[in-house]
Length: 375
Image 1 (spheres, helix red, strand yellow):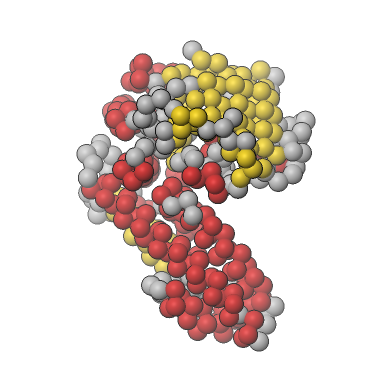
Image 2 (spheres, one colour):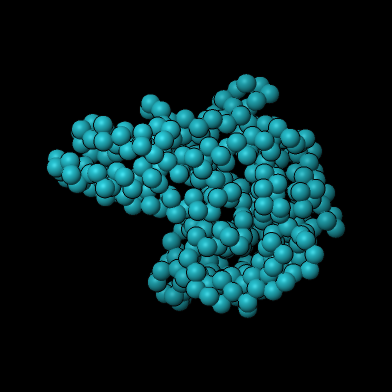
């Protein structure tokens, strides 16, 4: 269905979602409006699978980082298909994405084949899932992924830079592992890495600046996190030329290690609970969760200010980890922002404070097949 003019000026949101043979959903059709969506059902019924499906309407592999093959419904393993109608920037777009029996995932936007990166120009989607609760205490890899998803929300082209950098670095690391000492092999790869790496660093710094502004300018019931981009070793060269020189200077050290030891892939995100001056990694579990909620809301506010519309939010089991007052505050902030937030929970009472400001779906499991219905 080609893009159409949409009525009025509202936030980015889904109006329809169809799942076919995706995870536990053999067939599901969901129709919604721009309000928040509360999805209720027992554990294992398939609530999170709906949110995961929505997450792959944005660039990347979704919040579970699953392969296309892993997402197909078992035992049939026929492949899967997802279709969404997205109202974005005053237009309605049809997004289709699918995988046929283990084949690579395909994307079509408004009846035209497209890349996964192109999804970022249609749907801006942010998420907070239980697996992210360990963000501050896990390794730097997880925090880099978090930072890059945040950055990607502001700058869809960030995905291209990250892919270019990773591809060139894999080739350089292969040379290092094979102990190739002919320096002529390294120059072209390092030039590619420097160009993409400088863009990655610049995009990350800009995204953190936008996030700081959004936190400073907002009144919120959630704690503010002070964020800093740091390197696990040394400092990040500021220019493309400096980064290219750093790669060249590090060749012999990298040969000894068998991998590249300088660059944006060595970055880390350091967070502090601002009001207490306590590193996020040392905060209580509840405080760490509140900081995460605060960052997702700040990201959404910054996006709304930058592009004129709030993004879609995916909040898996978020209500269960907040007390009554924080839950009410979260719902008020979501509604004030005008975001379509998709939230999951085991009991409808968790969303009582939303009242008619939200729409409700119930997910049940019948003989291993999820069913979805409004209530």
